[in-house]
Image 1 (tube, rainbow, N blue to C red):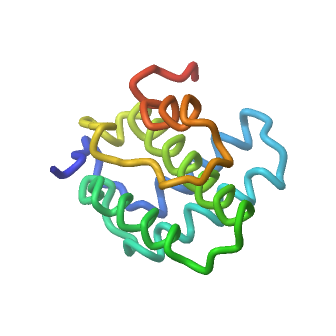
Image 2 (tube, one colour):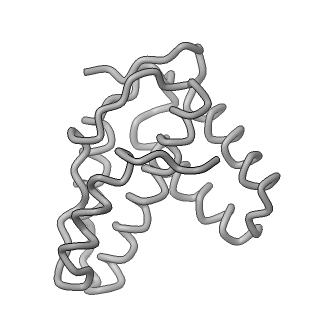
Length: 135
């Protein structure tokens, strides 16, 4: 399934607009910098493709690749989960902005976690974008 888009927007352009919105919303510069690093990494992995070309498989492969990286214990698990959350937030933002016209959260699986995060929280993160975020 291809996500689909009303606009011919590249991922890097969408990222820049998203970060600008975060700035206008008052997010501190350190947090915005962390968001930029995560999204830059994802865009390097997928290539700077159009939003409409982005598939859940891209996200799944990125998270799997990140999860298989050098394991540093709990810190590594937190890193993977935080990147997953940033990407989910960005995709939700693109949906609200009408960059994305179709989305299926059930096809993007959350990263496998150790006992660091209780299963109840892990389950709710997997179903995160079934509930609208207030924007």
